[in-house]
Amino acid sequence: MKRLLLGTTELKSRVILAPMAGVTDLPYRRIAREFGDFLMFSEMVASQAVIRNVMRTHKMMDNADDPLTSVQIVGADPAVMADAAKLSYDLGAKFLDINMGCPVKKIVKSDAGSALMKNEKLAKEIIEAVVNAVPIPVTLKMRLGWDFEHKNAPVIARIAENAGIQMITIHGRTRSQLYSGKANWADIRAVKEAVNIPVIANGDIIDEISAKQALEESQADGVMIGRGSLGKPWILRDIDEFINTGQISEKTQTNRAKCEIAKRHLEYMLEFYEPSTAVKLARKVLMYYCYGTHNASKYRQKINTIETISAIFDILHEIFLT
Image 1 (cartoon, rainbow, N blue to C red):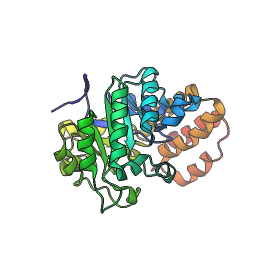
Image 2: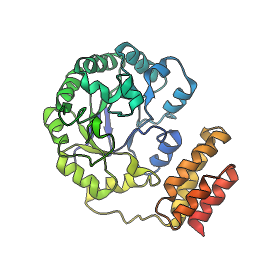
Image 3: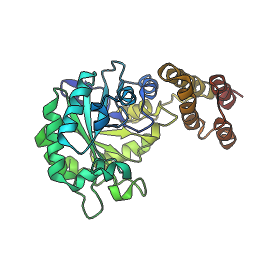
């Protein structure tokens, strides 16, 4: 099966972990990495924060020398985006991604994220500035368009390819949809037909079946998994195996195995964050792993009351081992 190339790097998998704000920190990527050699993305980081040397932002970009981690930057000023790209490269980024898909009001109000799809001239200037600023592969993530009347993803894709972008990910919704409705994978095919670089399908891909359907409808070169991986990082491996073999993975996770995976994830968080921060973030992580378990609603109430590190592991064992 055809491999994906980013610069001189040959990706071993057509499955990619999406950038997710507040989710894809280093601990999350570490636990996901245990299941395969997937290209992964950092949380979206603001270009202005990068060049202001904000400590928290640099921590979000930490890739622990992982050769398959990309840093995603967002902004609306070509010069600032270029400077952020240079600093990201200096900090060890192996790949860079330009965010033109974020639909959040705060980002859009600053003319960044998916707002750039309304301004093709500025989008072109930003793409060219970032590509010319660094010697590493630059990719682009965007939506189908601003709204149903302006699905200009193919136009921007051609602009991006001509400017040196090496891969494009398309979320199968417009900005006006936010995350409502269903992702339209079929419309991604127009982007695939418009360019010669790899195109990745994104949106509502949560398991093996949806991944296969997204690939068939979009004719994309790969799939990007976001919210479908929350609390089940092994789904990346399962989808990869299904794409390559057509067989549903038999490596089902027992409760004990899920407990061990969640435990390692939480331990990575304790290594990475200060204890008080780790405890707060652990609540959200435990919620993800808890989803779908017996008496999940009861455990969610307990999780919200966690105040200590020891309580984190106590409730984890209670969820999966009792």
